[in-house]
Length: 214
Image 1 (tube, rainbow, N blue to C red):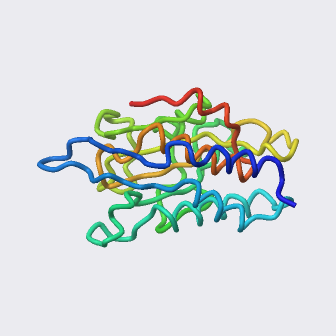
Image 2 (cartoon, rainbow, N blue to C red; image 1 turned 180 degrees about the horizontal axis):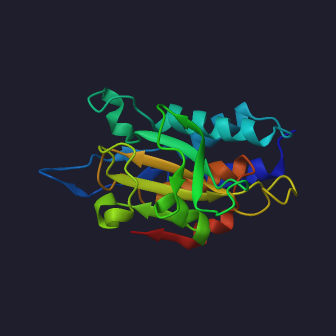
């Protein structure tokens, strides 16, 4: 039997399935991207059991997101999928000063860890808001450049909606997604990612009402 939260997410996922990117990038336009979040959410649900523990759900989200939208090399044909990296960062309760976040899982390569809260991941966690950054250069010195080729970013706050643990029932981290292209993400991507996270019990659809574009 499919859990209700999964059914809700599958109904939400088809919204804005086609992402139109008309952002000027040098002498050319970033190509039209067809990111099918409904298919990605369906794959995610196939990977999960209703009682899956938190770490399993995190890895399943990364696996489904990367398999649908990621590419390994800038020159590869899959570049049109637009995503160069995705992963989860967590603000560890053991960090007494609360000034760092730790990488939990990711695809396809390692990234900076721990990172300070001055970057977009820290901002998404502190504000409990989704952020679409069309051009990371506007962030100035606060941008944490794990890969200097990355030019746009998507950040979604996460918490565990399936358990009542004090450590996970509030926002404890973020889903972070990067791209080598300027303007690779928009609000449709944020809503699609939120639907995937909701299917995994890691976010609430209400976050879609507070998407911020930079």
